[in-house]
Amino acid sequence: MNEFEFIRQLRADTPAHPGVIVGPGDDCAVLARPSGRVLVTTDVLTEGVDFILAECGPRAVGRKAMAANLSDIAAMGGRPTAAVVGVALPANPERERGGERNAHPLAPARGSPVHDLHLGLRDLADRFGVPIVGGDTNSWGGGLVVSVTVLGEPICEPVLRSGAKPGDRVFVTGPLGGSILGRHLDPTPRLAETERLVNFCDLHAMIDVSDGLAKDLGHICEESRCGAVLHADAIPVHPDAVELSKRTGRPPLDHALGDGEDFELVFTVSADDAVKLLANPPVPVWAIGEIVAEPGLWLLQDGTKRPLAPAGWEHRL
Image (cartoon, rainbow, N blue to C red; front, side, top):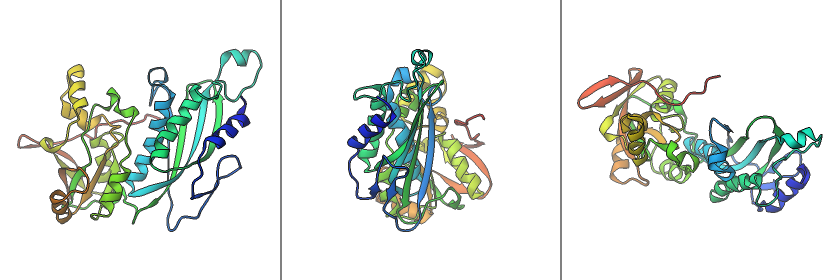
């Protein structure tokens, strides 16, 4: 199957969507003009860094690639409207030596690895009503690379990292830590939670936990020019963090603070909204600390406040 045969197959598999005037197959997709501002996010997943293809399979890679971008839309207080996908497939050495040029050496027929990758992307896209409107495929000498770009629109106003204020309370939407045991491959973007929270209270700042709670909350503090105090006993620790601690010897709380790829939301609201949120939460939330004027991060544990390093994942370029 060549590139254009593969495109025809994808077009046949792509359902119609009211927001898409022209879908895959042309030089550009044509979308119905959204009202107001457009959110745009992109994320690149590479084999050996973000996933081990031989261990997880291509469908899980597709799910994770789509989920990471949908999570960014959720973190901006938005809803997704469309996605495009770029894929670089590992080249087939046998075909290269034979002089045969094939843009899809993994043979993208139904049931093949690349078709499974597409199904994984569709698993999340279809679940959240996001049309995949186009993209590009190629092959190269390295491992599998998947790049997804998602467009969206703010539900009300975009929720930035720069809006936290001293006196705000810090919340998180779920337990953290230990995602490397498997959850990092099958996250659930908190789009439904965002929709309810945005319509319930005034979100001052928000970010998704992709690099680690301490690292990502540190981004909010840096952009908002403030600091934060976290209460150790209030941070929800995932059972996976407890299990992982048995293998690493590190406390479960350390994993909750620094592991990342939980894809939960961390956000800040005023003290008044915090009271309302705790009294009648529209979604599960945990109050884990407060924003302070002094820059930096601190952890309050057993009555002692100590500086907290913004530990977490960081790409080295």
